[in-house]
Length: 436
Ligand code: HSE
Image 1 (cartoon, helix red, strand yellow):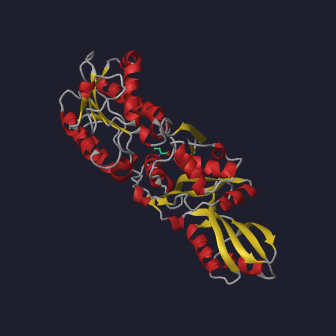
Image 2 (cartoon, helix red, strand yellow):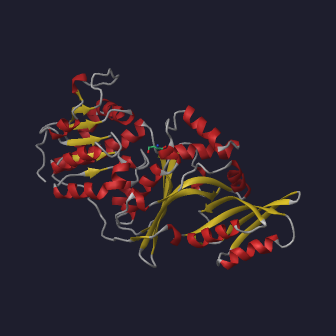
Image 3 (tube, rainbow, N blue to C red):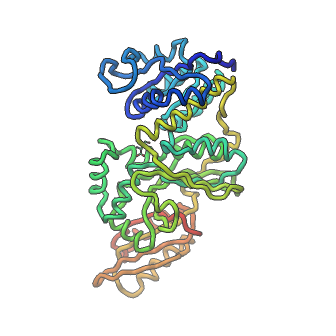
């Protein structure tokens, strides 16, 4: 790559000026002198693509920079770096590809795009000698992708386990701390501005699944697309589940988990609610915060914690990438590209080894426990804990298993539903973060 001429400003095309884009504009303005000193050349906005350029915005920037012509802005010869904070697949995908094909460095916060079509973007970056950075796409301000990609590149990662969605963590925190039901907790999250008007991307786990795909791809040097991530959201988590978790010394979290298996060179990637012990470091991650636990063969356990969403925290991650790309442009270097050499098999959820917490409504009479236990035994699932609470002639039977494949556990639950003595399977939830 030919270095850009020393001293001239590096020019940025900003695509999108919403919550994150506005903060990028502010940081560029407020930290201009420091950024120049850190990079060795000033950064300058070449233009800002928005849907309504005439809208009055309270930003420290020349209003003449706003344009509705995002494609035209990307094509301009005086642009060095393209920052994409529009989100969604199109037009972001076409704009990012156009920028990469022109050899422009690209910084994007777009998790949906990376998780669904990252391979195409990486390929374009490689073919046209361009940088592609996306730290802000996962867990906002928390430095996570660069540590995985660079600081830990000498280690073998075995597991990535995290809370990567702030909205759902806020809802589950409220349910845990106040006993609120899901709807009530979601209403509070919406009133406080955490949840979107349509919160399904968060609540149903799509947002976390995209982040899990990106994290797993980098951690395990394997291409992973979002549709390979097993996904369950939190809409079915009840106050009774949360109370049952509390009775076991656990709390419920929406976890993103990516695990490598050494035995068959595979990786499993999943997002689902799970009970974790209150003693686990992730249990103390409250409200809208994110945290990711990484286990490396040599480095051991690492935890990354901080604000995973919001304008300023996400813009901070974007600006870190802008500085990296700018430095590369000045030195004629390029950042790390895709590393997918390991090409591990992505295993289906049924093969994943996990543990279940099962709560059953049963009749309180002789033989019930033995019958229930025999169903577990028939599926080769070992029981770890049994707890019973009587209510007159009925009882709630809570069973926690030892580790087994998800397929065996799911088949056990299906067989329990068919038992006459089981009035209802009140809840089924996986248990994580305990020794197996
Ligand atoms: N909606 C996400 C969250 C933030 O609640 O964490 C953006 O990824």
